[in-house]
Image (cartoon, one colour):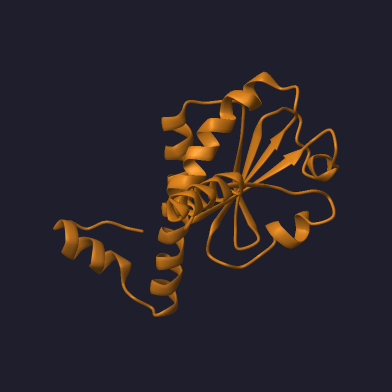
Length: 155
């Protein structure tokens, strides 16, 4: 029984920390890191209906991909980070990896669309990293594509 209670308490703790609230004071420290994880920044307001609808979607994404994605929330009414980034509507989601903003998206969306968008950001960054390494090693990309697909293609 004791073990079951500890397990349940541990699960509650994990769920409570899936999305981390940040502020102006610690935004730079949390967002400008080089750790190869995709960072999603959720700009929201407590009174925003679409923001509230997105909360469970973001929670499930955080639980599912917590090892590859860090999700932070910033209340636009309590902070000024949104002003610095010219956030004009909420919810707005910024996608950051290794200190670089990959993209941002405004508005609520379905769980499937949000998950696809997030995973596409991860895949896009990996593909770019592979291309950079191949270019640094002076690998003939045309030859690789030709061998793989049996045709000539230019990259």
